[in-house]
Length: 324
Image (cartoon, rainbow, N blue to C red):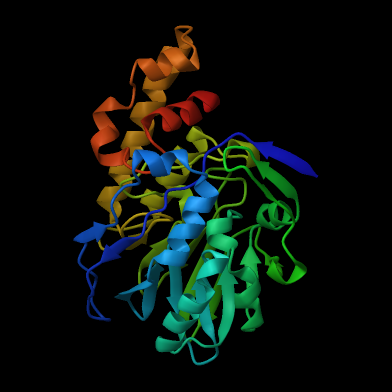
């Protein structure tokens, strides 16, 4: 099956967080790489993301309870090392293999027992094949398996994603809440209703109180909404509300892209999505075209904080306009 996606890619953001002690919550003070230049935004986003992954170092940040975050290869990656094999959240971009393997080795995670794909996009699943070589079972939502098994043309990326090799496809699908146990640590997987895609999963290290949201949450960035595989602005808002309901004030929240956050960041993100959704819906309801809606600058109050990634204000307005 071949589908075309008239969408833009994801932000090439590698936020570097200050190191923290293993048993304590990390400082939320962070510095991220500079936002992409206008010239970079005009390049093929697929090539930009791969080039960034090839160039950037892997930054390892201890979170809490033995859980780590790795950044520098597409989306944020989670790792919980274990005597019986590590539990890993997302696999980054394939070109980062050697750097990620080195980082994992230093964490004592040379053997990987489980890998969760939070959704199908290449900056979260590109490393599936080599992680599977380390012995990992690959866990995902059923629709993620389907998407990875199809040919999808991403027009704006000038790239066609062909079905991934069998070894890179999920081996276990999760259609409802399921809990795994890693060295006594419960790890709870919860499917979202269609939000960023039609196959999003959250990964909740419940004892450590660390939640990985995948791309249902982009911290300090306008998110990508994949309409072609079931995403929508309303779905993103529903997922944001689901994330808020799960966490407490002390929960460490790891977004798909951007720096680590807390509950207050989720609330601010949800409120931004709602406000822009309502502004765009009002303009569209008055008969404005997408071009006229963009010209009205419905995102302007939020652009300084959220609009500095590859998904800029105009692009985000277009994505929201499609779904209201």
